Image (cartoon, rainbow, N blue to C red; front, side, top):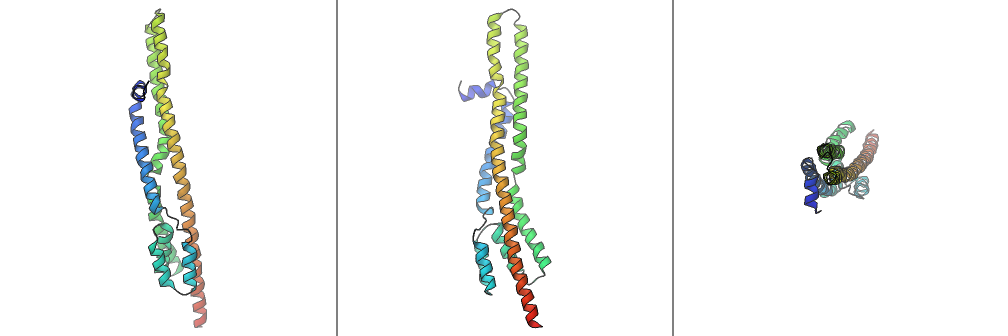
Length: 213
């Protein structure tokens, strides 16, 4: 049987499963594109920015942070723009900036998580409906052994829906976990970079205040 025949043999449940598969493919491609920019962790940027700040070159540090896309650089730039504010106010500004990026990164992930649960359930429903139909035909065949053999061959076809649903669930599960892990890594990296730069600026503020006394 070719793929089209297998699909048609799975029953009406195959159509919503196909819609889920198409949506999952779209979401996956979209996530790869978004994470390519909004998920940039800017490796090495924090060290560079902190080094410039320690040398008193905050303007250069800000320009360097603004040159790089991603949440880490955006939070570093936010800190540098508001470096004369109180630490608590700077931290709030950083939280807002980070949340804007995390919202972008998390988009569609709940849908993929839902597909992971929904797909095998729909597939199981399709198989159950197919089995019910098979047994109804089997009962109607009465003593016709040839008809019974043909009907029993349809039992395998009734399992196509479950197989298709499980296949979709496996794909969605893998994609969801991959991007969820990347989101956690990006979030931690952003927090660490922000905390480090804030600490350096706070030390400079304390040192400057002590020098004025």
